[in-house]
Figure 1 (tube, rainbow, N blue to C red):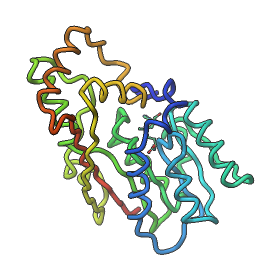
Figure 2: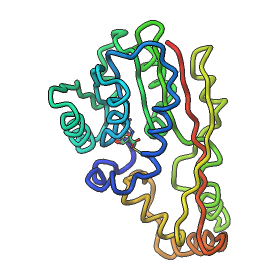
Figure 3: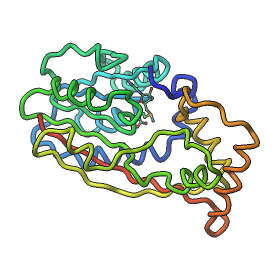
Figure 4: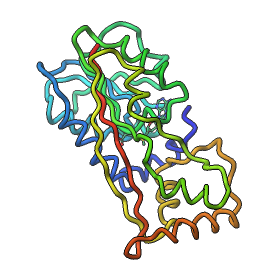
Amino acid sequence: MPEANFDAAAADYDRESGLQQEIAAHLCQLLEIVAPPSLVLDVGCGTGGLCGQLLRRFPAAKFDLLDASPAMLAIAQARLRQLRPEASPQLFRSVDELPGERSYDLIVSSMALQWFDDLPGALVRLQRQLAPGCLLAFALPLDGSLAPFIDAFETCGLPYPGLRYPPAEALLRMLPPGSRCCTVGWTQKFPDTLAFVRHLHRLGAVRRDAPRLPSAELRRVCAAGDRMKIAGQIEIPWSIGFFQAPA
Ligand SMILES: C[S@@+](CC[C@H](N)C(=O)[O-])C[C@H]1O[C@@H](n2cnc3c(N)ncnc32)[C@H](O)[C@@H]1O
């Protein structure tokens, strides 16, 4: 299971995940594919937003879904069936359940791999599932993302309890030669730091293994974050890496 709380947040995820939906749309647009894929795997599919977009682009493809959260998988499966009633995706809860044959023409993942405990191992495992000449394409946050929020913890002398994101070069070193990355920035705006913290909780994007921050400390972090307001709002930057790796 992931360390985050996505299973509990699945019902609210579509309402909270505007940024994730934009990123999935961008990943879908960037795909450089010569022939339309016939079998696609979405890793960390969440509620299936990326699959839905890919289905419109590749109407003849069959989709399989992988997510550690049963609630997310159920919503993604329902979405797929709504878009295509005859869809019968194979469902996986972890990369370790994958069959090990080189069967997929396209493996995609949006805003999920950063949560994996063993990212290098997962990337090797996914590469092994790709048919020759096919593509692994994924998007995830890179270092620099959330910088003012992380700084607010440091200003208060507190350890940052969230994920630390890698630089693009570190990821490219885990991928085969010929892999590419492009980076795109997004900025989310919130009325204050507490509104951002609440958004992360509603999204499920909080580590379950992180110690709960006492409320006095949370207030200090929020006050430090709020001192960085720009025109009355806090701005949360995201630096998203879009990777395409050949088999
Ligand atoms: C932020 S959501 C992204 C969902 C979707 N791809 C999107 O773009 O909206 C991350 C998803 O990754 C899944 N996840 C996290 N760690 C995982 C793991 N180790 N194996 C499989 N799925 C995982 C979570 O359950 C969650 O649904």
